Length: 435
Ligand code: CMC
Image (cartoon, rainbow, N blue to C red; front, side, top):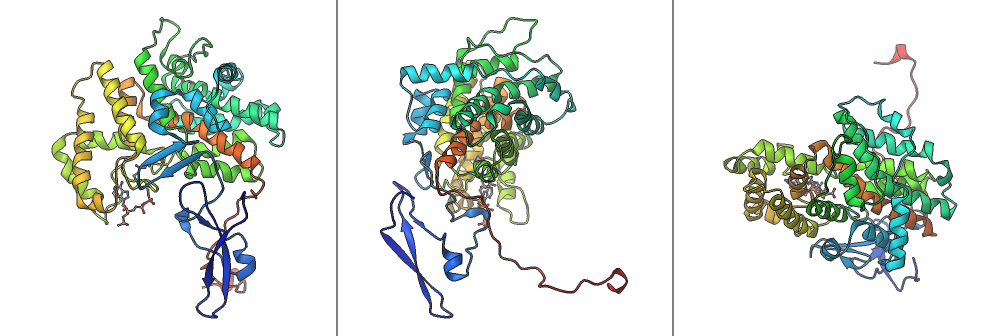
């Protein structure tokens, strides 16, 4: 931490009356932290915080969230401004280097990323080891991890230049691999990237074009795709980013770390929620079934949750959900989809839930995943690809955090402790003497 602590808090053990001063550090905005790094050596106690609800795991300058006000800033810039005025590669640069690029820097950056979009030809044969009906996230966990076997010249984490190249490769190759996972599921040939296209255009081209026909990119859909990527680019120390940081803390190579992030993102409580939302909306089917589903979501004896609702940090409307809702309207209008029953169900569900005491009191609002599935489905993506698109975009954030960790002189291997409640030491009995 940059400055020595100027204030402290006192911790008192009521049983013994002993007390200890704990340093307090302030960020630029947001809650201050109590520094407990020496707590165990000074007091013999651990802190206990499953799920890290009150624990800061690192110092970071990348993303700030004010969950009560519904604010999300990347390097100080509000997410809605970035989504409406910037583009994904520019945001990826911002996350990585801390500033928006000037014209020369941008040209250079786009060129670097563009010229890394192809994957080693032999990686293509990796895909055929998977069943055609494999979930594309299962394929992504495998092939992204496999990049470490193909790019040996960018796995030395102590070499700054190699780290930089690894970041370029990961951001650039994720769309190619994601499109390949989709093509493989259809039994269609892989489509090579086109360097004349923008990042989002290229992804749509590799995903939806076939060699037998010309493919015309729809600029409205390409813009929407780019916006969706921006909205998913980073979200500070979420489960997958923390997974990347934890994996990296052991010195693992960048491709292995990002593969770890992908596995963590896959779960329905995190990136898998966009797929789960659409399944839920389809199951609801019509507006008259909404009260029933809301009742189930409130029932403690039922494990069902309203997917796309609630967030660990946001206790207000997720600012990404607002932009996503606008984008949803733009895409549906462009595609001439009027009165989409799924959108109508989603909006009615949102209206009813936001008036319901349960959701109001628990401050459960729509999150980024609530509307994204409707847009992606309208654009032609199958549900199984939704989380893959999230992973593609979040790679920009993952690599930025991965790099930041190396610049943080105070980082150690991540090694949480535990409150042990199992057996105390006991004698081993030979099998014949056991009950
Ligand atoms: N539907 C019904 N009840 C809910 C929901 C929901 N979607 N979310 C939270 N609650 C209730 C929960 O039962 C608990 O009630 P109580 O205090 O009576 O036990 C209370 O609200 C607090 O929930 P929590 O599980 O302690 O909160 P959390 O911070 O651990 O979980 C969450 C956050 C996102 C996992 C959770 O809200 C959830 O499961 N939402 C649905 C899945 C979803 O949409 N996930 C995407 C998150 S945004 C994208 C991303 O970051 O990946």
